[in-house]
Amino acid sequence: MLVTQILKDVYMPKEEVFSIMDNLWNAEKLYGRDAVIKSVLGCFHDENENLVVMEVVDETYKSFSSVDLFGYATALTGSYDYKETVKKHILGNKYFSNFNIGVTATIGGSGAISNVIRGYTDPGQTILLPEYMWEPYKVFAKSNGLNYESYVLFDGDKFSLDDLARKVIKIAKKQRKTVLLINDPCHNPTGYSLSFEEWEQIMKILEEAAKFGDVVLLNDVAYLDYDFRGHSEARRHFKLFSNLPENILTVIAFSISKSLTCYGLRVGAAVAISSSREVIDDFNRVSAVLCRSTWSTVPKGGMDLFVKLHEDGNLSARLMAERDNIIGILKKRSAVFMEEAEKIGLHHLPFSGGFFLTIPLDTETARNVIQDLKSKNVFVLPIDGGLRIALCSVQTIKLRLLAQHLHDSISRFKVN
Ligand SMILES: Cc1ncc(COP(=O)(O)O)c(C=O)c1O
Image 1 (cartoon, rainbow, N blue to C red):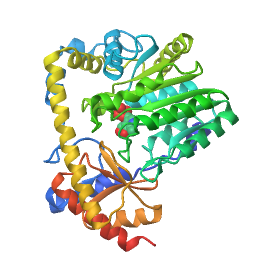
Image 2 (image 1 turned 90 degrees about the horizontal axis):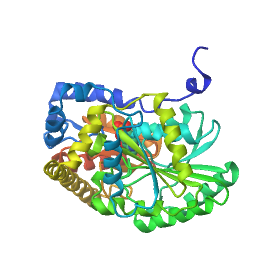
Image 3 (image 1 turned 135 degrees about the vertical axis):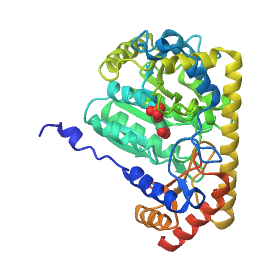
Image 4 (image 1 turned 180 degrees about the horizontal axis):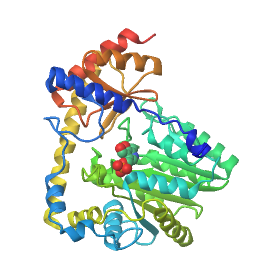
């Protein structure tokens, strides 16, 4: 066997995306765009179903010289300006003057997640992932020789603190090291955002776990800039990441993929916070090793773009206006879908904002529903535990019909 056993054993889930896309394109060719509902892609599409690249982003990027776009970055873990701008964008100036912070530029949010998982676990350990999740988390875990357990997300329409507490403490006692991933705000795929009070409780649980061993909290904030509650509320919980015991490290995984509609540019960041200078020095040292041994440096043009858009007041204002417009459309789409769902009795998981919403279903029913919907030119992505509704890519006008199709099909196939 030429490849390693660990990689050979990794099950790559959900190649369905690509086969669903094939079916979808065929349906569009045969019947036309208007006859097809495509709730598959995780990128924002406008009301004409075209992928949106924000104008100010496009213009600014194209204004850079070739040397600026194609040259190497000036530092392995990201340019100084990029790191400072990321820090300001995520944490603001308010809470953090006294705390130890390390920033590493990464290849998208994926790079940040990968760095933390590679840098802070040993093969054979178990990490904690959410019950409904962005499926690649499992690939990150498995390809690094790790196991994962998932914590239950909901208790009614609130976050299930009890299950998280049970699992965190169990792992802390057993392994003396707990790596926990929380995708918030605007969790993919449910669209749930934790309240500040729920975050306070989560941090108490982690402080309890830290009595048994080291704790690494990985907060994936891929949808940070689309929180319906607004800029400050989306970031309010970050202040809880300070003044923690020295053996708790928090890393925020940030990405410009969604924030700037720059999915293919591959730029993100890992922002580490600790009350220990030594922990952050280690983070910086280890990050350099992790970057060097995988992608080396991230694209210079992408980092410069982020800096320019946030440092130039006019460009920032335009960026915010364009993003607000997207958020407005997402709000409208979610309201339409949820109103119809309520009217016809289609159950979905708690939603507070973002790109997606989830219909919980057992695997068998989900599979049947997907096949049934395909025959009606409706394409929906399966996830473990249900179906993901991509509010980001379905025109508002089609969402009532999508809810009705889902309801009819689920009623046909669901046992009890
Ligand atoms: C929850 C979540 N985290 C992280 C990512 C990583 O995105 P990227 O690597 O493109 O920044 C995505 C992308 O879809 C996502 O949905």
